[in-house]
Image (cartoon, rainbow, N blue to C red; front, side, top):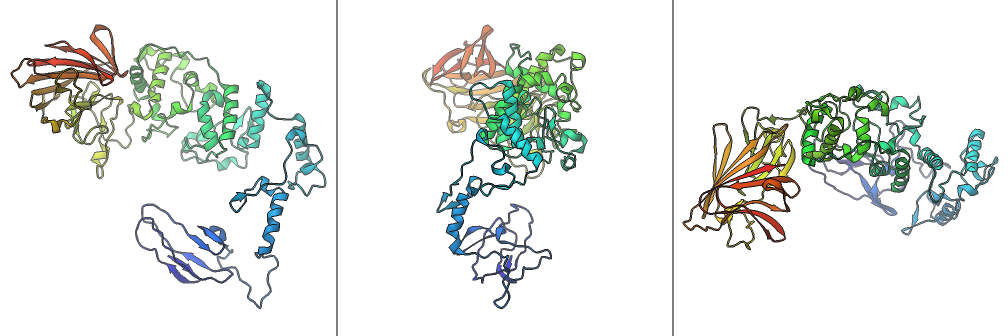
Length: 623
């Protein structure tokens, strides 16, 4: 509710979303007491008070408000009282002269002021630093009316003159290392980076301001409250990340209550380039092990989890908090740091940041995790990097349990029927003890998604209202089929039907469980009955699938036109009957009947198995 001069002008009371109301009133020149009564119960938490009038554009009223020490209105002179000579009184006749002075005195060189929509241009142009003369302008002893008075001490004037004589300007062409260091130091001083950061022993918070840097996690000590030193910043951080942070600011350390300011894209590109060229080192062994990125990522997820180096004990991962201090996030790490630095830092964190709480997982050069790659440091680090590169798509590492209701298939399979991301509302998710998981779509009659390691977090659906889709908890999440893999084709030139199977007469018959609790999914259509049994195959840390498809045609003709589609997209033949499918996973198909064939249709490839009579098809899926 808005009160002006003690009178209620606007009543916008009650519980409601953000709603604007307005009213008009005639006001006499002078001061008017204003009061806003408001409360917030929950929701948008928005409050704004705008005003407009003759000569006043619509906008916030905050600049027109004056407060007194006691909260009382400023007294306004009446016609019989003397007018305060110090009080500003608007005089329209001075506007044109004020505009001229704004230009001629150089105010427009720093401040933006527009007239009729166009900015006022400064009549003064500052000379280049190399052309400045000592003892003139702001460095003159008696000052100058043409430049601002900075009230410099004699020591400050001498320092500025010394800097002018050294002509710290960016040289043309290739920049020598000494020149680049000087330019970077000058730029950091000009942007006041040294007020928060240290580099080369210079800068950092001064003693009187140091206590003002605080953290929400005091256990982290200075690492959690002071901005990081910039020694080796261009070696540690990617250049594109430096540009982003310097140009737009960032909050990648949410526990630190000091915000990084924005310095604009132009400054960011220059500084980031200097940091990178001065600091970056390429010395780590990043040799390719020859393994697929998927396999490396699986081992990497094991390394960062509680059964590996236990990185999740301190670092957050996406929306999940760590079990200990909430250090900088793991899932966005590869967006920030360079891979070469990562390989050098993890074995010896103290070398790069003395006093850090970050431990080494490789004391005396030996890994503390011996069951991954036999303790090979280089391969373990490469695997961790592969996993971290996947970000939020890599799956949640072992050991993160905060806020979860994790379903674990420890002894027998776990079936979870609810809304799963990337599947229709009739998804049936199954987690197996072999750490291979799937979601079978009962609307599409298809093996829709497969993933490895951890199964599912049921908290979204088992707490509160249970709305929204749940994403798989593990890693290597792969979309497999989008439509039923068994259909009738008129001939081999006919495109695979991609419409909803139910509209084509398919009917889901439910599923049955074997003695170990593993489901067989059943469906039928006019030409065949199908039983789909995915069986997990145990691996070193996670499993794969061997899928048995039993197809029984219902017609009497030997050539029924029924086919099983084992894969579609980009198909590359491998040895021993294997195929690489869409550069994501490998499949191999064996049958009790006709051999598989590969056809080209619609600009892509398909692996088909003709079905003549009751046929058992085994499809191995490795990803």
